[in-house]
Image (tube, rainbow, N blue to C red; front, side, top):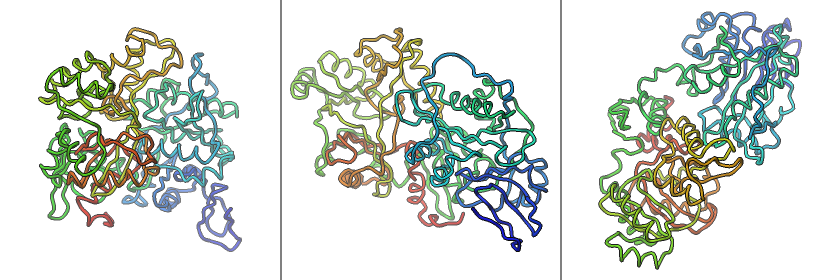
Length: 575
C-alpha cells in the first residue's frame, strides 16, 4: 500500500484503497480501482473536471483507463482536447431490486472465480482473441479476494476449460456510493466455443451476486454496434441511461476516435493489416474492399496488397503454391516429408492407389479454403464421387495418402516463424432438443459473427457424409452432451477453430517451416502440417498458402511482422 505523509503535497495513487489525494489538506479527491487492464475511475467522486482529466493523463503504457460517470464531459475534454475523447459507448443499467434470473433450463455452463494462475492466462487468451486489453496477471492474482472487484470465468459443466470471462465491481467498497450500485466490465466469450448461453450465464451470475449483496443497480458500457451484446443486455432487462465515459487517446482506443472509413468493407484478414499500418502512420488507400485489395504508402514507398499477399511475393512463388502437386514435388526434393500423391488419370489407377493406401484424400490441384476437398475416403465408390466433385473446381484432381495427426498451420514471414496454431474441424454439441440442422445453423451463425462473416459450416455433400458416417441424418435430434464432428478438414472457412501453440512448437517443425518457405522463395506463407505432436519431430507438410489469414493467429504479432517486412524503417517509428 502507498501512503502519503503529512508533508507530501504531490498527487499519488493508492492501488489498494483505490483513491488519490492531493494538496496538504489530506482531502480525498476521487476514487478509482486498478482492475488489471487499467483503472476504473469514478469521475463523479472527483471535485472538478480538471482533476478527472489529470488522473486520465496519468494512464500507463498499454493500459486502458476509463473515467465513468462523467458529469460534464465537455469540461473534462476542454482540459486536454488533444489527449482525451468522449467514448462512443452507451450505458445500460439493470435494476437489481427487480432482477429475476430468466428460464429454468439447466445450463451447460458453470461460473467460478479465478482458481489458479493458468486461469488468468486463459482469460487473456480470450481477451486477445476478442481484440480486448489483457489483464496484468499479478494484479488479478494478488487481488483475487478483493471486495472491490472480482473476475469470474465460465467453464463447461464437465470441463475445466475456460470459455468466457467477466468482471464485477462493487462500488460500495470503492467509495461511499449513495446509489448503492455496482458495474459489469470486460465481458468476453471465446469466439470459438460451441457452448450456447455463455454470456447470459456470466451476466446472470454477476446480477445474482450483487443482488444478494443488496446492491440496487448494476451498470455497464457497450458500443452500439455490438449488436449481439446489446440484444443480450436488453433481453436480460437492462435499460439505457444517460451516463458519459471519457478515455485517453492511445493506440488501444484508436478505433473509437479515428474515422473508420478506410477499413469499411474489408474482411478481418485485411483489417488487421490496415489497423497496424495506420498505427504506424502509414497511409492506406482502399482499392477493392470486397476482394481485399488496398495500397499502403509511407514516404515515397507504395505497396499494393491483397490481404497478406503483396507485391514482394513473386508470380513464380504464387504459381508454386497454387499448384499443390508442384508444391509437394518441390518439398520432397528439398528433403521435407510429404504424403504420397498422384494425379487422377483413370479409375484403374484410383483402385491401385487405394490398394497401396487404404485411406485417401481427394482434392483439386488448385484452390483454397478447403473447397472440393474430401478426407479419409476408404472405398472406391466414395473416392470416385469425390473426384467428380473436385473436378468442378480444377482440371487436375489429386489423390493423396491420408495421414492421421494434428492439423497444424505455421505462418512464416521474412523466413521466420511468427505463429503456429492447431486447427480443429467443426463440431456441434447435442442439447437433446435441437436437430442436427438447427445446431449446425446455430454454430455457423456464431462462427460467422466471430470472424466477420469469414467462417461458417456449409451443409454440403462432405458435411452430410460426416454426419451419416456417425449414423445420423440432418433431421435427427442430437442427444444431450453428444459431440459430433461434422467436417473432416479443419479449414477455418468451413467452421473449423484455431488454437495458438506457438510457444510449444518444436525446433524441428520451426526449421521445416522455414526450409519450406525458402524452397518456395516466398516472403509470407502459411504452411499446413499434420503432426503427432506440436512438440515432436515427425511431420508431413500437406500444402502451402501464399495468402494466410493473419487475423486467425492473434495474439501472435502477425500483422506487426508483416508491416515490418513491407516498411522495415517504421519498426521504431513513434507514429
